[in-house]
Image (cartoon, rainbow, N blue to C red):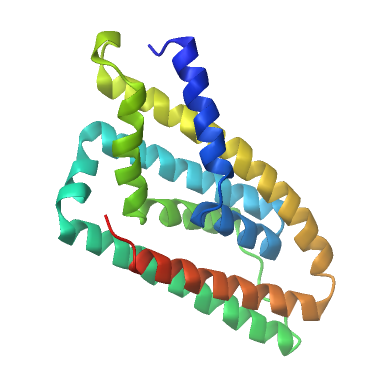
Length: 208
């Protein structure tokens, strides 16, 4: 069991990390602006589920595979970049549809949740980051390292949920007001497409 002071210090660091600009923040921001705060919250739940997946990977030792194997890292990285480019294509096409006077169909909660899960799990750098970060707050003297890793991962997931939910609610509220203008909706979709392309390029050029 984690001591209270360790849990609190880790949670504080996790909140700061969640607040720092990164791919997940941008993903929540763009999806919330495009589809509204409820949609953004579905994405947040998906991202947090992905965090749990990374935590389990670290506990099971899978993170060491990504850290040691260039091929495994490359495969997951390419899959993540391909998915981001797919989302970019969808956003740009939706922008064109808005320009022609038709509104794209709203995304279901399940689809947005899956987007968040895939977005998180196809970023191997997160698993490697967890491999380096979580053990700093674990100690063999406190019992099972695997159990401590799981507890730390849950705390990180909670911190991410709180920060990302606040971002989703704020940006979703702004996006819902902006989308009353068809022209603004076009530019929101185009901006989202550009962000997704940028995230894909960043992932493609990332190193272990």
